[in-house]
Each structure stands twice: as structure tokens, then as C-alpha cells.
Length: 398
Image (cartoon, rainbow, N blue to C red; front, side):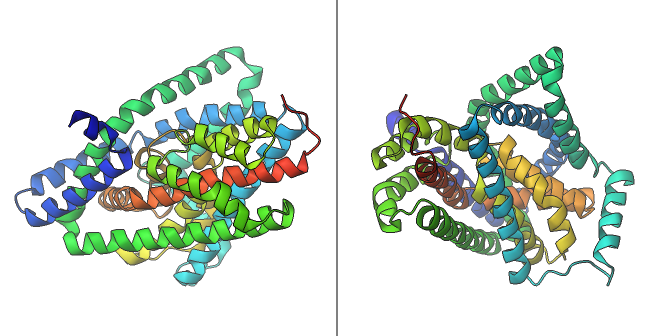
């Protein structure tokens, strides 16, 4: 029995915890109101340290990106490609969600310039700590770039990186418990039928977003650039890799199999050995796309609160940075938490609204949506390796 329990993947535990939490939260709403209140207050306190987590994770990520970018033509090309595709993926999410939810450029008939000014004024001098996530991003990028010139700073970033890497297993173990309490909170506040409706809507929405990105990537990268048969790539590489990646919900856990599958497809081991590991760390295209597109979904569908195109434009580059900084963390503790916190600050939500907003975002984006995002992220790394195998076809094996 113990062996059977150990074989149950983490994403399935999180999904079970979410559904169970929603059901008991809705069924025993009055009795569990105190649990919901405690969860609300704990999360409210935790939100206050999110900017610190952003800084600790983003600093070494920027530093690694800077150092790897200068290690040869292949390295520079791959790093540049991954950054470009992440930015473009975020733009696709922005454009798609803007049309789908009919988002206005600015509120109150104001211009986009006025909206940006008002938003940054709020971030700079708001009455709450709304500016901290944004400032943490700017400061982390600055320190990460500066670290190459200061040895003590480099050692500090190495310590941050070591701490983040070692915290991942512990965070993974407690995530189902966290999700359980988030589910209870969601069930108490919205009821089981509404909560599950939103969850399955989010699941379908994520599937559509990932499908759009996979179609674009295969048509442009596989067909146009690499000049490969899409059908062959899907049959020999995509399907076995995507199924495993969806089961693990982790780009890093999928890394050995992904590396093996692209080599079996015919990619030069020297190219595969660089492109796939780097991609597992910094290339989360579908996450960049999804987390930009999630904000309009959650704001308009779940909370019926308007969001402007300006807010999406401001958040877009920050979310790309988040996807680079948080690859090893479970979805709820990484990009989901940071993205939802950033949007809450950009929208100037009060403390109560912020806590409910973040709780809902984390709960709805985990489980099956995370499976879709991970499968897309991992297979796009393989598509990139196939493309660079054609681009650097004269590279010798090593």
C-alpha cells in the first residue's frame, strides 16, 4: 500500500486535495468558516514576503542568463531564441485574451498614457505595499547584472540559488496540504458547483492556449525553419515526451527522458545536451502565455472586475522574467503566486481582494492546467533542439 501511495504523482495529489477541499468547504461552509478565515489571514501574511521571494529567485536567474549568454555562438543563439519565444508567447496570450474578453485600453475613457502614469504613481506612492513586487523585479535584475563585477555579491547569489534548489523538495511535499486549504477557502466562499465550474473552464481555457502555441511553434519552427515532417515529429518525439511531462508536471523531472527522446529522433548529442537542459531552466513559453492570459479570465469571469490592456502590457515582461526565475518550483509557489501578486498590485486591489484573488488564481491554475503547460514547455524545448540541429548541422559530436 505504501509503495502504491508513493507512486501517485504530485499533480494528482494536488488535484485530489483541491477537489476534496472544495467539496468539504462547500458542504460544511458554516463549520469551516474559521478554517477559511485562518487560511485567508495566513495567505495575507505570506503575500507580504512574496517580493523577497521574487528577489531571491530572480537574482541568480538573471546572473545565470548573463553568464551563459557569452559562451559561444550556439549558447548565444539558444539563449536569445528562448528569450524571444517567451516574449512572443506572452504577447500571444495578451492579444488572444484581449480579443476574447473585449478588454479596453484604459478605464474611465482615459488615454493609455494617463493609465500608465496612474498605475506607476500607484506603484510608487500607494498607501499599501503594492509597489514591492514591481520594485523587487527591477532590483533583482540590477543586482543580477551587477554580480559579475563584485565577488561577494556573486557568492551571495550562489547562496540564494543553493537555498532555492534545496527548498524545492520540501515545498513539493507540503503543496497538496496548501492546495487542500485553498480548496476549502474556495468552497466556503463560492460553493462547490461554482468552484468546479471555474476550474473546468480554466482547464479548457489552458488547453486552448497551449494548443495555439503548439500549432504556431510546429508550423514555424518544425515545418518552416527545420523543414521536418510535423507528423513524424509528433509520432516519434512529441507524444512520448508530452505524456510523461504531463504526468510529472515538472520540466526538470522530464529532463532525462526529453534528452533521450530528441537524441533518438536524430538530434546531435552536443546540441541536445545544451538546448534541452537550458530550456528546462529558462524556457517556459506556455507559462508566459498562460499567466498573461489568466488575468483577464480570473478578473472578468470569476470576479467581474474590469482589467485594462495597459495592465497586461505592464505585467507582460515581468511575467516573462518570472517564468525564467521559477522553473524548479511547484506551480502554486512559483509563477502563479508571483504573477497573481503582481496583477493585484497593478490593479491596486485592497488586502481582502488581494488575498481572495491570489487564492483563487493558485487553486484554478494547478492540477490539469499545470499538466498542459508542462507538456507544452517540455516539447517546445525538443522542437527547439530539432531546429538548432538543422541550423548547426556542421557541429561535431562530443
